[in-house]
Image (cartoon, rainbow, N blue to C red; front, side):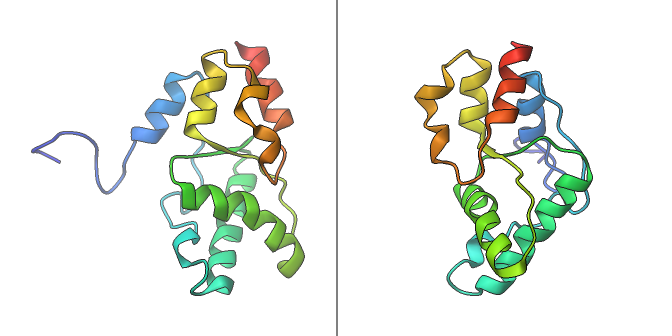
Length: 135
């Protein structure tokens, strides 16, 4: 960290700072830095689903409107994973998941129709409406 002075490895803030620069609020929640389980998919699916479930439960409990991620594995584990969690673990979260590039595009005024948000497994209509109202 001293060499690059980029971020704090034990408590990184880069994504939170980017999100807050866009006008959104980054919500603190239990085990925020814990893995979502995405890298375990295909190797230990049960563990991957339980890690994703824990992250979804913690974000919901903290009152988050959505989850923003930079990682494609996190996106899949937390978006598609919600369908699998509903099917296999009988729990429903309906927590929209946005990739940071989608959040940035919305903040810059890109039409949501151009972002193919309808391909998300968990619909983001509510959070997108909230973003559009705040512009």
